Length: 334
Image (tube, rainbow, N blue to C red; front, side, top):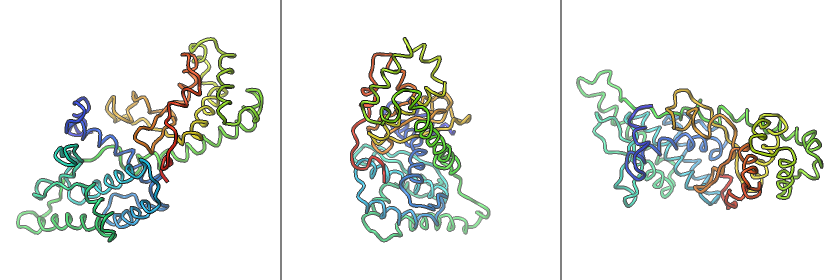
């Protein structure tokens, strides 16, 4: 990952370096949501100009559904991110952060290859214009404009063979997105646990499906079960990897998925990620399935086994579940 995109990691929040770093780190999640939840089937997630007409059509389709909540704002950010990546593939250059935009709050911008001598492009503003004009061609026209500038420079004397250069954005290639790499794995994992709960775990835990019915009182029963089996967090930790307790952790998390509209997620560790950044092996969220309210800015997240571990720190599982804000329209994103 280039230093330009990581040097703001320790910069003060609100500075251009930090905001650019945060935008680049968030792009993976934004692109994953665009592919997984914000788009219809057969979405050509290619970051190439021909996909922009389909993207703009999808833009109007999604907004027309009136999903509401934070999901719509997250959707617009994801469309802007995809547009920006596509424009970078047309005209080279890199992402930047302009502190003067949005009344001083700043916005991400695309800075084309300096050789083109073009002004920075503000993808979010172009998306807003596409929403207002409803022509279906705004995004594609912007790509055409940049492509025209590239062609014009190539035609000038002495520029034979010239191509714009761009700084790659890490972790947003199609093959790196969870919706491509982990969706089937998570689906299989979820069905395994559901079947185990239905046919064996509920009986082994005592009370069968009548007791383990995903209602709030069933978490009280899980509290009791934990205290019956373990005297401390250390004792629980020794057994936490056993199949029975892995399923118990899944059950507690699945209750939250149902009540609070959280979603399962898995971030595959990437050996090339810098320490402390998303997808690094030392990141808190990589390497194990967790639940997260992905479609709201104040959404909470928890690792299932840590939910159970909290019981030995004096918490009740219902209290842990209440760390997740109550659902509002748009929390599922579709």
